[in-house]
Image (cartoon, rainbow over all chains, first blue to last red):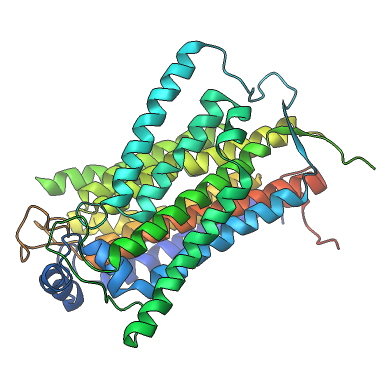
Length: 252
Length: 80
Length: 115
């Protein structure tokens, strides 16, 4: 089918889809008038029941903890898939950058870049760790904090060069840490199953509200998820950074 | 007052999304996508969802553009 | 007024993303359009949970019991964004592998599946 015919068909189908979508959205409750009881119940009951101010974290790791376990394993499988697909085509990568005028070169040109990268690294690591740990008190959590923390890998690659990246973010330990984080979540679930008969039930002592070590199993699970997400994103960035290096054929 | 801010954020999101889709060259589309991530973050903040805004900021500004740019470098300069 | 705009925008983004995917001549452009389409669902689901004049569902500095938006759609969306981005990166790895095998990124030229 030619390009014009496809564009015409797409536009007409798109108009029909748009009309259908508007008709469907008209059946929803009006914007700003959320009716459902579940959210209100959680907002009223949650802070006292679990001693946690951040209800979104409580929903993620306690009330709907099983969903988060599934999502984390999707993340784990996707990172494993990326590593599998990209390593299969690569024999062994050397630190030489790809030839070409616009290739990403390994070492930066100026000291200003290195200084700025060092500063940005400090801010990124501090902020990412703060966000990941204080999931129960402020907006934050394992997913967000881990993603921000893993940005330090990109900073290392772009500002300080590929050799520094390889030395500071080695492949083996990062993979092990990611697997440990993913496995620890399930291990906590099984431990709570053994302790109380329900998977992922909150059995540890709940502290006072607003304290760092409160809300039972939620900070533990949050820590596991933060570690796993950070290591997973580091591995993802490492694999893609390896793609910009020259390959060496395997010795026969 | 807050509905004015939300209306502006919504219209901006729709406009930038259209720009992202209509930019055919991947090298230019990456930067439009980073702008789209920023605009989405602002929209999520006006919808009173700070956790979601943090997620979108980290992911849309660092992870995906890095992956796309590394892919583009490999495609253009890699060994044939 | 804001009620109508609020539901037109996610549907528009969704249809625009699908239009971009269907008329794309480059696999990477297609993957970015897929990511745009996914983001339309995040906007829609957050709008369903919104309540006018309410605050975020974090009760560090407000008393529990003040009007707050729905926390469940927040929790769903934030894990969804991170996982969606990782799956997008997986698709990019696939596109790179396709380029290494066939030296083209045009969906038009990739018609038949070869063993």
